[in-house]
Image (cartoon, rainbow, N blue to C red; front, side):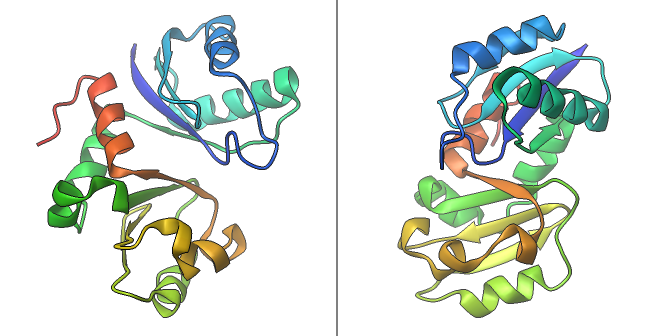
Length: 180
């Protein structure tokens, strides 16, 4: 058994609701150990020996069965999460203003042309970089004001879900990582 970080796309937005207590109960009913949630925005940590892709499918199926929700789940191991942290191309920005740095974890990789499309939408010092299956964003004025977030869609980028750097580091702590 090892930790798994489960990220749900779009949780508690646009009518997609599954209370965290019920998410933990679902995980326990699925045989996942030590389920814990972080905030009410689709962050679940469990212990499982199952491969990440299989676990993603099981969780997505159970979310639909139990809650009637078709939500994408991205599952990552602590090793993958550690690499995500180490690969951050905006470490100074993350240290100074972690809420303004976002890591978007992609389910099946980044679509061709997505990085270029985001860069074309960037304004006011915004930056975006791609490393492996993660898009990293620097939003100096916040993502809510960004044309990237207003116009970029899964059809353009691929299916993914973003977490600000504060959340990235809290999830790391939950799986026993001590991010530097």
